[in-house]
Length: 165
Length: 110
Image: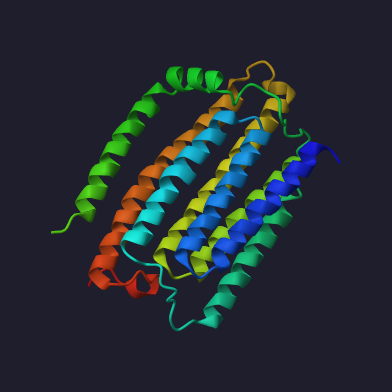
């Protein structure tokens, strides 16, 4: 077993285990911290796939910005109470069964397909910053600029929604 | 590494996100599960882009693999914008109802 396979298995177990822990913990703050671990595992996968730019952006944007925003909201509003009153176990069971059957169906369908080419790991220049930057600022410069407008509108929207009236 | 390993991993993470949306009732955790689903799809996109880059048809023009990763970048941008607005909505909801239970919000009025 090569080091790459070992790392893949380790990161996969880390991602799936942390995602399960995110679901199972009661406290929202612990949930957020477990989700950060998931994001770090996914960033590890990106590094394994030689998508270095996405790995860094994933850590900065998701673990650094979005999750901190979640933590701010939870802590500022003092939502860390473990109150999920009147547990409906039947609903839990139905959710788990439907989700599990969805996973079964998807896996059974997807494992049938025959894709001959392996995934290139640790090689290929497509994920390097210089290549991505050239593509982003030549072919995709218009969507890039439009996304700045999207951010501006999201910022204004968040302020308008969040302000006290 | 076979693409099927990535498919299995991504589908597992996606299903965990779906189960979280179905089972949990804390609005913030439901929101985090949506983020998890977005991330699993991102991972699958990158894996497929690297698989496509390995195929002989794409050897001539390697930009396709970059295109997929630009897509992932834009998904991250949209997710960041979505989170800011969504969290503002959750804050507003908490201010009005003093609860972030999604079952409490089964109607838009009141």
